[in-house]
Amino acid sequence: MVAAAVAVVAADKAHSEGAQSSDARAPAGQDRAVAEGTQPDAKRPAIFAEGTNPSPKVQAEGTSPEAPAFRLPADLVARATSLGEVWSQEYVRDLRAQARDIVGGWPGTLREARRRVLAAMPRNLEPTHLEELARITNLAARRGWESVSEPDLEP
Image (spheres, rainbow, N blue to C red):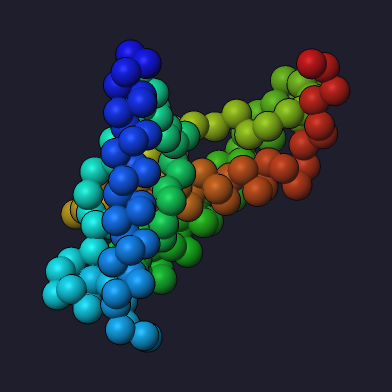
């Protein structure tokens, strides 16, 4: 295993020294890849020593690293937001009727939000639209919940 790590370090060092020497030969103001007529090595897969591969990033359900590549119709967004607000109001009303405290984080889930969206929206929704509308509904409900809830002081 140590030998593999040494080989990777040596290969990386040789690669970086080769890049520096070829950069020195490139005409001023031009990229090395352009000067040599080749594509950059950016798409080359990373090499890791045995047992040191980084674990893949895990995202929480309902989160997205970037905005969706589509635009939802404004009327559907407004309906999803309204649906979430009504959902949180129903939840608060039910808890108050049971004489329970409104404490902590929003108890609703994306699965519940999907069911509410499916029940209230047109039947011909695309799966990506359904997911985005469920996310909007859940976020609106969470905002409504957080406006009336108290923080949970117990660990």
